[in-house]
Image 1 (cartoon, rainbow, N blue to C red):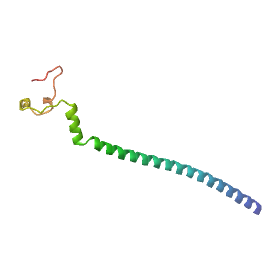
Image 2: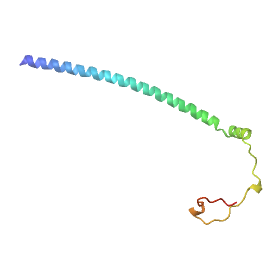
Image 3: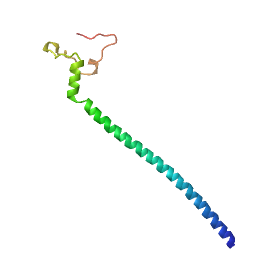
Image 4: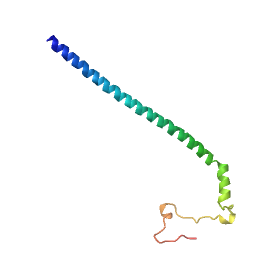
Length: 105
């Protein structure tokens, strides 16, 4: 009986060591994966920081004004270009044109 107990104990010890060995290797693999994901996260955070910096540089009002002046043929609005819209009844039907209808000028 004592001999069976010793054999069962040794078998349980071997199974426990094998299980521990497998868990250890699985944990190391997960740690490597986590380290890779953390590195990717840091790279993305840095890329976002650079993109925000570029965005704030590109959208400066002084830069946009200079680009608009150089590339857009805009002139100041003259008073004769401003007109009042005729009074229309309130509601959504005032905004919808009939099919095939034309805008009034």
